[in-house]
Length: 367
Image (cartoon, rainbow, N blue to C red; front, side):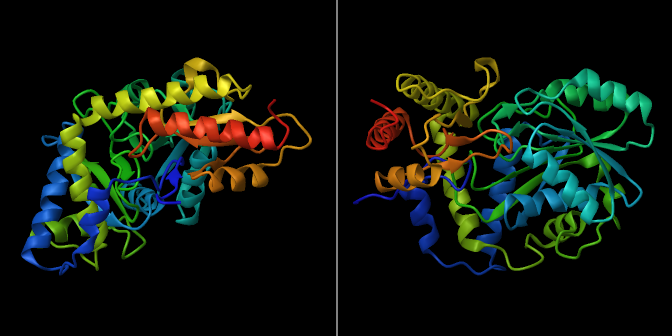
């Protein structure tokens, strides 16, 4: 095969040659030129959410989950109580990491096929005054459901509770504007819809809560308050940064702006999603979610109901065709997932549909 395999996952993603080439240079982590790259990235990220007036952004080493843990660890005080709105695996992960840090977390659970309910949140806040913060996964990629960000934000503001948003799989593609919503922290990462490589997260923090974060962290490396203060004072990262990842993100952000920013990226992903869903429908593969709940980030499909179907065999055969799929995240029903994001367009989506059709024909699942 003369090309890299296409990653149809929620991250890491397929990246452009320009992004890959940005990692060929070595950088000194304290060098002024590298510090300028970090400064420029932080400004570009704030521009995406129109957040320069009321928010700061703090880069963090590691995977996206590192940054979610850093946000909860730094924003939630030791006596805080986080209510996590739960309609999938990544919601449960937020509650788990909160409890592991010795903070109280409660799950408010919903059907994984549907968005979380703002009305249910309101009732929970009325009935339990100990809740200080709400945790929301914007796009729960366990099934691919988009949750109602604006409505949840409005309720949190009404009840004067903080909002921590995991926007890992939505930031850069779905519209998020700080002028329309209020949150204490919003988290995403380099290897998602900005189409860079994994290894770096970033957390938007509301300026009004910055000083209240001092002393909250029970971790040295995951302390966002200290990371922010040190970066503001010196322009440097506290600990060794992922220099090549930072350089790749800088180049990916340039391409993001050249493409037309969030609206253009969303339009391409919608086209990818439509091509995928319509193409697979023709060979009898149906989405797990109702049409109105499908987001153009990742689509969960019901596994074919044939004894000869086996996901591992299906996965390996599709991989041989040049495409990496993603296993299902659901526990009660067999599914698989196909991502619509990354440096791909409808051409690659048509190709993967054709490849899946061919593989299922070989498995005697499709005739």
